[in-house]
Length: 217
Image (cartoon, rainbow, N blue to C red; front, side, top):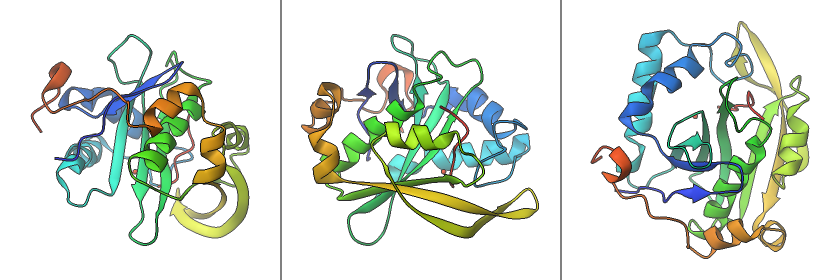
């Protein structure tokens, strides 16, 4: 199994998804507003359940390329959003995905920290050299989130994905390991060194066992 450790920051922490996270996951992916800027269309309940099952299976793939984690508030083991990393099949590159926070999440305003925690894991444990991310070009509020995560503007990819009956342009950003690591916080440095908290299967009630997402901040 390829379970990620718990990744702790100042305002939130990340962990693997569990079977008990289905309700908030379904709430996100069937929500009319939260799915507005996603790279996939709004789902019905059955589609969300099928997608959730696929996410739960990620730690069992070899090699593991998809990492979708639950965003939790400090001191609380409750999912209030998602954050993801998709490792590309060539080079040492990956894409940040799946940043969505529930409207009532106490971590709102700190979504960039979820990205930074996963970037520290990617540049550290996974040995990545380049991590990038994108948002729909018309979702301009995400620019400040990308910059706060340490990502720099790169390009606009025209009509990259099709949702809600139309094609959408995507604005992209990227960070390179050497420059990003020099500006890492102490918590991020700990993750880079491999000092994150282990999260083995079965811990804290865990069972023994995605798209350009720009809906949360």
